[in-house]
Image (tube, rainbow, N blue to C red):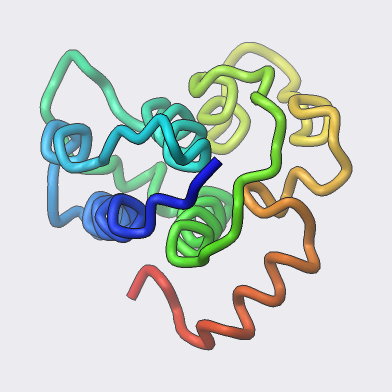
Length: 147
């Protein structure tokens, strides 16, 4: 599979703008590119759909945005999209709603851990394959990706 560099740049920009509350969910959905040739775009897009409602137009909710886990996920996704790395994860066996419930909390009892959700020890590095790849990307960019 190929890396769709220009589409990844557009997707990273959309993630930044939505997280910063510069655009609403409708704009984010329209801006985020679809690319079958780059599995990373499809996987990240699937997960991000869990962060907004299709039923109303809104900015990212403040209580969601304030969670460190959410910020970490957005930062990792932007870093990955700005890299030239191939997406190596198998298709995730979780839905976008599973991700969001896990990140922001759920009133339905105990939350599953990321490891339980994905069945992989380096899930906290997702969409990077492992912590080493994530740390290498952080070293390369040397800046805050959401600022």
